[in-house]
Each structure stands twice: as C-alpha cells, then as structure tokens.
Length: 365
Ligand code: PEP
Ligand code: MG
Image 1 (cartoon, rainbow, N blue to C red):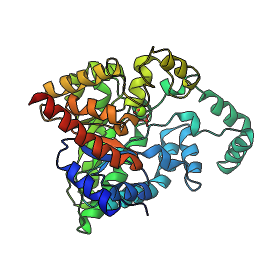
Image 2 (image 1 turned 180 degrees about the vertical axis):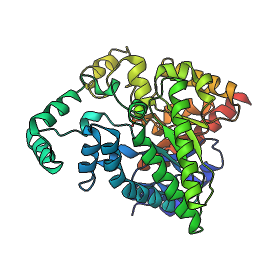
Image 3 (image 1 turned 90 degrees about the vertical axis):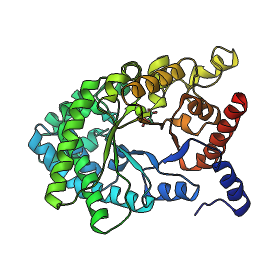
C-alpha cells in the first residue's frame, strides 16, 4: 500500500499549516480512495460513477437499460444495479470515515455503453429475447456524431429520470446503513454533471430531494446531504448566479470547460497542440495547466456570480487541473475552497496549495 515516509510526511504536515485550499481526491474505487487517504486527501471531490457500470456483472444490465423501449423495462434493469451501486457508495463512505464524499451522478458518453459489434448485439438480443435486426437498428439510432456534446450528463436524466433516481436512492440507502451502524458520515454531496441552465438543476434537484426523502421515511433515518453541480460549460459559468439558487456547492470541471471554451477536443487535440505550444500560440497544454485568461476568466466569473447569490457557497475544482501546481495557485487566488485530484497527485497538491498561500501572503505584506 503506497504511503508517505516519515520525513516527507513531516514536511507535508508543516506545509499543511500554511495552506488555505483543502485537498480532496478523484476516486471511484475503494483502493484509490484508500491510497489518496494515505497521501492525506481530505475527502473525495469527485467519484465518477460511470466507471462503476462497466464491470462484467453490470454491463449487461446497463445495456438493457440503455436500449429499453419504455420506463418499465428501464426500471427493471436499474433495479438490478441498485444493490451493487449501494454497496459502491457504502464502501467509499466507510473508507472515508467521516470525510466529505462527492458523488457525481452518471455522465457517460452513451456510445461507450451500447454493444460495439454485431456479436455483442446478437448476444444481447438472445438474452433479452428480442429480434436481432430490430435491436441492431436501435443500437444504430443511439449513435452520435459528437458524443461529448451529445446525450450526456444531466441531459440523460432529463430524458430518463429513473437513472438518477436509482443512483440517488443508492446514495441515500448507503447513508442510512452508515447511520444505522453508528459510523461516521459527512453529509453526502450529490453532484449533477454538465449543467448548462439553472432549469436543469432545478428539475433534477427537486427529483433527487424527493427520492432522498422517500428513503428517509422508509428507513426512518435522517441524515444531512447536499446537492450541487459541476460548472463545466461556459453557459454555466456565465449564469452561475441563477444556477447557485439551486446548488449547495459548485465544482469546476475544467476538463470539459477547457474543451468547450477553446472548442478543442479533449480526445483529439494531441496532434496539433504541440505546435501551438512550441510556436507560443498557447503558453502550455490547456488540458494540463489552466488557460488563465480564457478558461480562468470563466472560473473567476463562476465564483463571483455564484457567491453573489450565496456568499458561503462551497466551491472546488475536480478537473485534471486540480493537481497542477500553477493551476492550484490560480485556484487559490480565485477563492476556491478545495482542489480535487488523482490520488498520486495529492501530495504535490498539498505542497502547491501551501506555496500558493505563502506567495500571496508575501505579495500582500
Ligand atoms: C471535467 O470535465 O473536468 C471533469 C472533472 O469531469 P470528466 O473529466 O469526468 O468529464
Ligand atoms: Mg466533465
């Protein structure tokens, strides 16, 4: 199990006294959560739930859900996923032992879930007892030319509410288990991805609250919880004042925010970004280190507008930039409460956060 050794840990403890930014981790498995905790992570800032659905015991049900013709079939497939999803969250809550955990509701490019070959389609057709040709045209209809700008994130839940309802129930049931067992639990943070309008969040928040209440009544157990949103589209940053009306917290998704602000594909820009950096058109790869005047301006605007509505709004970042020292200095200055990064970047983030505090103090004294 990876851990920090004595001397390094002592240096980190000193650094911790100076930093204002909290450091959380992006983790969706108990193993990653444990590693990050050993490195000093102060919570989970992003649990990406889509990764949980690719397991051999789950992908079949996920596929059934995606290709279902109606709500009843979709709910049947989702019911099979509920106990597994509840256990996923219970395990993470247990490991984090009272530290905050942010669970992001499903945000998959849908095409990753559908059968990829005729073989897989045939297999699925046999299993769910449906006509192969019919299923094949269904799968084809799910194809998108631009999946990253497509039926993703909260858009999925606007069209198929039952998906997020299942996940919210799994979170609430896992929280009830923790409470019933007298274990330490920080108010679970439920996060809605790819929000572009306040209306999306208003609708999905109401739906999530209703489901949490239902579970609390069923189990006769109460627990605190928060509902917040990713700010990862320019429109969300520009309308953060309205979005904040429905959010208990914000988390900047700077991966998508970079993609959509610069109009640069996260997945395909490798071929030309090198020339852009070497010719000085861009200071650095904007997916590694935040583009301070472009994407950064939207981050500042999002913080400013959000806190105009809710002065105490908790704000973090969970894109790759959360583990990059230069970006961390920027987030410190922008007034964020925490950064969240991959487990192995937690130590460097702690140091960078301390350095950012010291640098700003020096400038002001
Ligand atoms: C992001 O967009 O920055 C983010 C954290 O979410 P994902 O990388 O899963 O899209
Ligand atoms: Mg994103």
